[in-house]
Image (cartoon, rainbow, N blue to C red; front, side):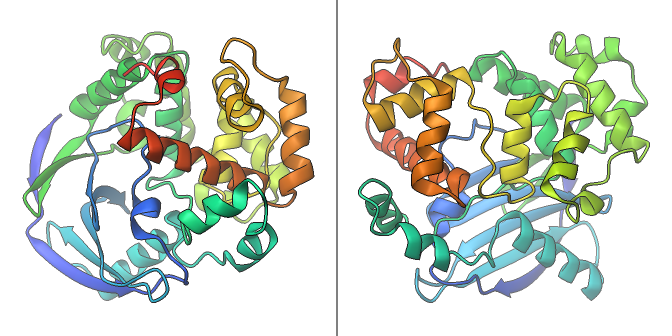
Length: 327
């Protein structure tokens, strides 16, 4: 599709996150692979959003401090928007970016930890986040399967160009995701023609499930973690690794940790046990280590270590890590 849509109407809302709050460490995750739906510079993030069939452009600006946070959110649209619609966008932004997250217990429990304490102090107020919907997250997870980062970037870009739209706002042109109905109306072969390989079947089946309302993110948010896990595993092509990411990033399960991928196994082994990348620690040992040290917040603790590592990589070359990343 790749049509350029001008978003000429601008609406501004102020959001007061819970303190402490680290704007850049929340709104920019250096470990995320680059995609055409967002842009970042210190103090600002631009993001496309498809909300209730409306393509929107979002601009987040840091207007506060760690201990007195304030985020100015500018919402760009094609036309006038009702106040109730805008408040719905703000509510969803609060959820996706965890802007009202209470970190007080986490900080209290682990600020004195020999390893985690210094990381918490360095990134005080950092929140996990995923900017998109469950459906959008699943598409990212699918293109990441068994592929180099470069290949994943190319596959997602092909999907954007074929099914998405480019939104023009605030001197930016960013791609916006498509409705699942767009792929429901197409064929698996059409997807294969975009060079996504065997992932075409997963993209098609997941899109069909959402288009036919077999999967509803908002009702799933109200379910127990076990119900969420079962529902996600029922989706074609979703395995235990993807479920772990989804439960943490999309459903805010800060302690869920039952599977570690080989790539993460190598990195965690290096971080926590200083092993060589060709001799990682057993995954069961890693999970037991996180359970002993960070029970109740295992994945949140891992997130802090992980983000700290990739922020370091942003500013300096880490030889052993570069061997594991191909972009």
